[in-house]
Length: 300
Image 1 (cartoon, rainbow, N blue to C red):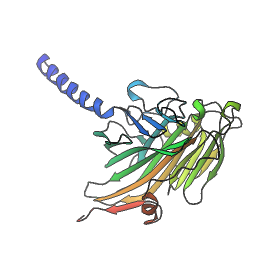
Image 2: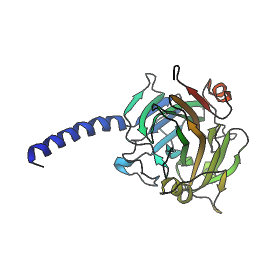
Image 3: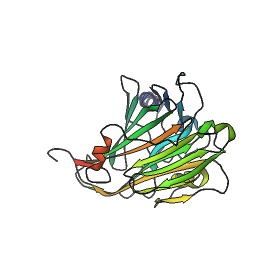
């Protein structure tokens, strides 16, 4: 390859990189007393959950709730909130990476990203929602769309949350799980200064969940094999850094069809344990077909 070709290739790469960098930009979403920071998206589908920021591969997040205070102040309660997927002949779970587009709503409450991988187009949305003076959540939806001419089988979607309750990860504890109806993982912080702080990871219509240490659950999301979470709960003997995952599994998405699932991570600074809730209208949608929303485009 001569220098002219190399320079042209580099120029093209610079344009592509600049466009991708814009799509990868994080977003600060605010609703009343709630602030959610979505970090930059991964550059690699094989990116793994990490207990440290990974620069260009970072998908760290922040979730803050503050009563009568600036929502961008206060303690951060999440380290990572992201989606992994597995479909077709994939031999492992893959992080959604390198979005083709990113938009933030005019009211500053939501951000939407699109990705193309594993034979499907994925649309991911984060929404910041206030649940009261001292509580709030990030609600996320993921839509898989099959724009191809044949069905894509074995579609799996994973909502992953590394909790960071009360701005620390050394005192998180799984207090209970719910596997009837919507799956939920309830979390408390046991530090004396964090009395009353609680969180909940929810998978509306999820087919399985996993809860345990970051090393175990985060390791499964980042390893090179296939992992499934059939309501696996392995809390440590002592309070520590915890990770949580919700899984949705469907046999296939037909050509021209699509599927949408919803996950949430809610935090309360004081009072009764927090309850994550779906956005208005989501509960009704989830009732269609039971586990999740599935549809074919008109004319498909």
